[in-house]
Length: 134
Image 1 (spheres, rainbow, N blue to C red):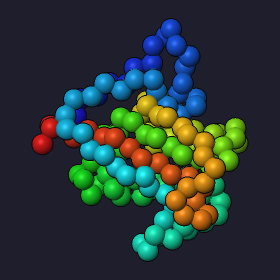
Image 2: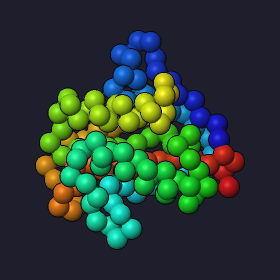
Image 3: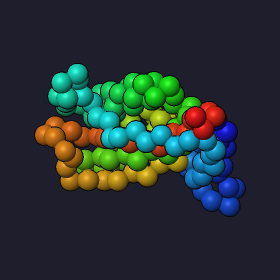
């Protein structure tokens, strides 16, 4: 896959917040539906926000692998946080940095009042690109 992360010097540096401004990609698009801290039956596995973020990204990794991809192929994520605040942003930014380092994908964070199931505090979806467009 060919993709380039771009953070123009004329815009603020977004990396510390867990995202990049631009991802330019070639290849075939793969959409990963919203992943949350679910077990094999779809039950929320924890009521702790940090645990939910970790498990949600693990589930995203599982979904990517099923498509023959991994985190390197992700060019955009959308994150949904119940009762968003700076403490939760810091937890999310740390998780993103652990996965993508200094080249995180683009991200839109959406603060929400609630998610699909009781107890869900976090959800993430993704757009990824294949290596060769096949």
